[in-house]
Amino acid sequence: AQSVAQPEDQVNVAEGNPLTVKCTYSVSGNPYLFWYVQYPNRGLQFLLKYITGDNLVKGSYGFEAEFNKSQTSFHLKKPSALVSDSALYFCAVRDRNDYKLSFGAGTTVTVRA
Amino acid sequence: NAGVTQTPKFQVLKTGQSMTLQCAQDMNHEYMSWYRQDPGMGLRLIHYSVGAGITDQGEVPNGYNVSRSTTEDFPLRLLSAAPSQTSVYFCASSKGQPNTEAFFGQGTRLTVV
Image (cartoon, rainbow over the protein chains, first blue to last red):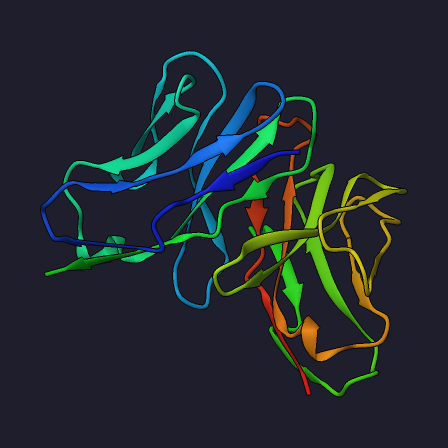
């Protein structure tokens, strides 16, 4: 069985400050890891993924994520948050031998001006 | 450049009614899936398909049926709607490799009264 935990329901930061959204995962084998963002009344949009290689992955809109195998984590980061980054963020995991994609419960990010 | 198209966007059903949520993709993706999104629970996998003629159950399949007669279409049928099926439903598609990201439709907001 595979699962994802996003320990924070909400993250609040001031514009211009660093943003971190936490994610830990559990899979039986090696994982593929993904981050998605959802704006109000919209579908999910892909931000970035970890497949293999460099543990620091860069994605869309200035976001990056760091894969840490020993801590089974894949935290999403942005050095300088924008008000437009306010949205719902989902972490997802897929076992390399499976097609099923499992999502965390989501973290609501609010960036105040 | 349509991507993943879901219809309808909104639907209200009475308890016991049946209906089909439509999903179509124009990217020639092998893998398609249906999720439901409920507050605080993230996205939960209902059914998925790895190709035409092949479907399988996800995490919460009870009360739902699917079929995959073509690569493009993956309809979700509610056999006898119940208030517990009130949710937002998302269809997703991806290429036939587990390391590829999923593309999501805009969602169908279903209310069962």
